[in-house]
Length: 482
Image 1 (cartoon, rainbow, N blue to C red):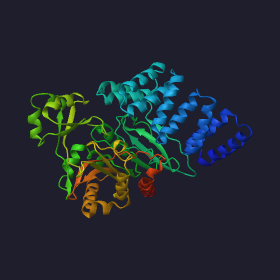
Image 2 (spheres, helix red, strand yellow):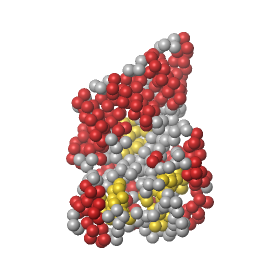
Image 3 (cartoon, rainbow, N blue to C red):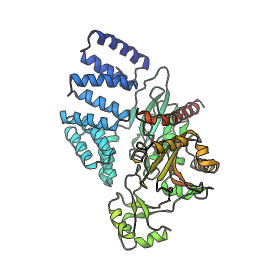
Image 4 (tube, rainbow, N blue to C red):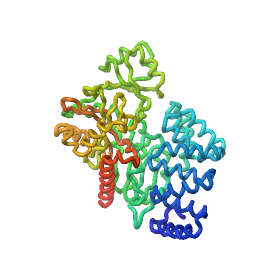
């Protein structure tokens, strides 16, 4: 069925297939079509049942393995998706799409060597495979091979810079033009732009041919969010916006002011906010005799944090205890420069670290999570949340009533950050110390909302996610109506 077919036609076709399968339960093609339609409509449980039955009958079918893996990935089941893509590659080693899907998961997990082998195998099977070029470009950028990354991105995007995503809803959708960067650093929007409400066209800003007309749209959502690596993309979006009079979410001028070092400087002075000292230095300097003097000149002392620009979720981000350890740490970071950052003490009396995240939507603050960990590098998916009912109870209190949890002074500080950032959509990572001050970690438009699994232990978090989704939808509808 045509990807653009409205929801009611897909639902009607599923009803036809239901009837057929009642008469012919062994009809493989009909069950496969029904699974695909259910997947497109977001009916995970129905699609899962069909895919499991299809695999029982034909465990080596590539389409079933690949589509089931995609379903699992979109539903937040990364482990299951990996297993399905691995099986697809094992049974169909010459199929490039299976290789690319598996490689992208491995890249997200930081398994660069294995991911690279699969991307290269995909390109050996199909030298023009655009998704293999794009993925390999991302991988090479991660490993600091900038020139090679650019070559692959050119091959992946130069002639394929517009993609219309399928619309699955009833009636007339709100048409969103989503601008992204080929360099990465984009706002994750899969869960925000519901395909039953929005018809989205993705535009890769750096490669857009200005001789091409912009696709029809009611609103532009600029998803380029990392000011430190996406300068070229943000400039390209400025030129694109000169050709439209439609409302814009996250104007590039506002995003461009949200680099890590820029944020530290512009947010310093907000009442109740503690921001870390920070400096950006050539990576080569950190391995030489001038390192100690450069660090002292930046007002920093050990231990400190070192990270490579342009990376998120804790990648290429390390704690350095002494100047003697700095050279080895710098050697393992990609790129030509590194940030050195003062470590703010976010520990409690038990030695536990906390990091909270609030989302900004149209100027309002929405609590998303509170992660509690014994490791200084606090990320929700590696924190001690799944194993600790006590930690989940504390997070539930934060989500239930954030103003009571952090106090009016903390709320005023967070609101001051949001007003300074001037982002329509973004997020703030922070902690609260014993005096009630906000310890600032990060604020930008690239904050990830990791999908929740079906496990009932996370039921207390679902309303917080729904509140953000509803706020984004209201913002987009309201702005477009203007």
